[in-house]
Length: 377
Image 1: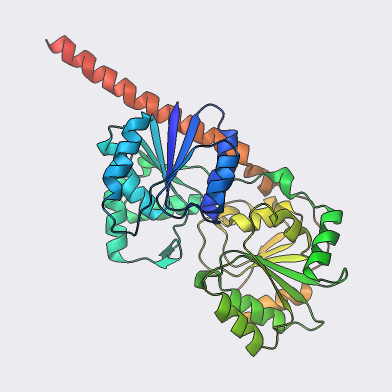
Image 2 (image 1 turned 135 degrees about the vertical axis):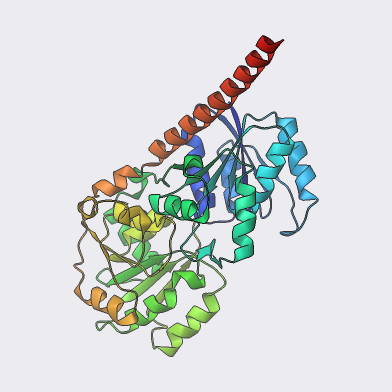
């Protein structure tokens, strides 16, 4: 089976990294990728993994010339399945797939929050356009039960929604004391420093300003290790200066393969984001044996609490986060059961089964239609 993945961009981001992680485990399909824009570091990594990657060169959201180019690419590749990722790619990819004659069209909804999608505020127009595009597909994949409920509340028919959670390479995040020492030396962190960690795009929705102010309010000179890059970097640096925490924050920038070492350098992981579709970084932190405090995480909220005893949901104010940081125990924990639910190989198997079920079902329907037509004659 030939599958084409259509994604908006291939810079370093959660959906992009998830795609790269999935493909080596999808051994029953031949996968290719086309990115509408930004063939960034993940594109290079995919090519290094042996995955063909094409760049469509789309100039913006309204570059309609991209549609016939994408349609030709899909038709020329004779794909059995087109799988789209992220809002713009879902709109253009579903339509192009239909124009190219592909009947099995899957979309993964990676970033639908309660009030935002991909970090942008939801509007009536964005929702209407989303639903119009969704009807062109065959099935929509939700990365959590929470996202599935949000899609159904929007008006997506429940029978079209499948839940396939995000996944991680669990063994890759296993705690390594040597990696901890090396990462701390490289980052200028003392071996006995209390290091609070945060991971994610430096965007308003992640609320890293709250985390910076909370760390500044904790006595004992803790450090904050922030992993990620984004448009809020300068503003967050100003926040750190204003609350007297400029020398407490270590800016690690965006990382591709080095996240396990940075998680090893931390003592506690905090997610201050109040609106998540899954909470992948939280699951990765649990895989690294870190105690976790989070404001929102569907990946854990959809499970019984005993499956992640090292994680606790907290309030999102500066005072509430600071109180947690004062009381958390600095010790490595056993990897909880919740993490093993989200193994990437398991997610890949679920997707391949979905492709086959949809493909077989559509072609069985086509056969039945042809048979009925022949019987009538």
